[in-house]
Amino acid sequence: SVLWTTRLTYSAAARQLEVDAQGNAYVLTRTTTSSYLSKINPSGNHLWLKFIANVERSDLAMNMQGQPTVVVSQENEYDIYGYNASGTVVSYWGVYHSRGVVEDIAIDSNNSIYLVGSASSGDSFLYVLTSSFSHVGTLLWNDGGKVTDVALDAQNNILVISERSIRKLN
View 1 (tube, helix red, strand yellow):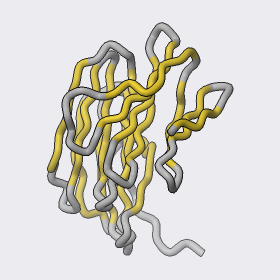
View 2 (cartoon, helix red, strand yellow; view 1 turned 60 degrees about the vertical axis):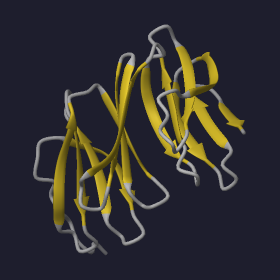
View 3 (cartoon, rainbow, N blue to C red; view 1 turned 30 degrees about the horizontal axis):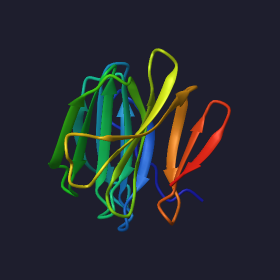
View 4 (tube, helix red, strand yellow; view 1 turned 90 degrees about the horizontal axis):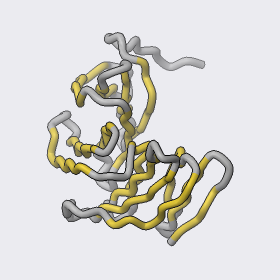
């Protein structure tokens, strides 16, 4: 049975959903040019909506403290926003790079951030950014084919899927 339904009160399409330990839902929405993050409480009440940026792509993950982290990406540039439960940006990291557009984000138990993406040349990449948010990411992997998703297992091994394969890295 349906417990509740909440209509999202803006014209952006819902793209991703994460849930914290208290049962709050964080919804990442996008129009063709903008991204938004909203928080819905366990009763279905809309708590807040935050404009993130005018970007081509965005992705959502939760850090180990249960706080939403959003990466927004355009060709050769990406920004990472860390939010607290009230919707305030508590960390920000932006970088220009030559690799392409970020497709997905994952965060491990040490709060290191993993970004995968693809370049217009068709090459794919995987960066890791340590929880210290240094301004230099470490390139862990670079290969042909479009990478579409990244995940971490319980041992913090990295699983990456591309159009035709899955890889496990440590």
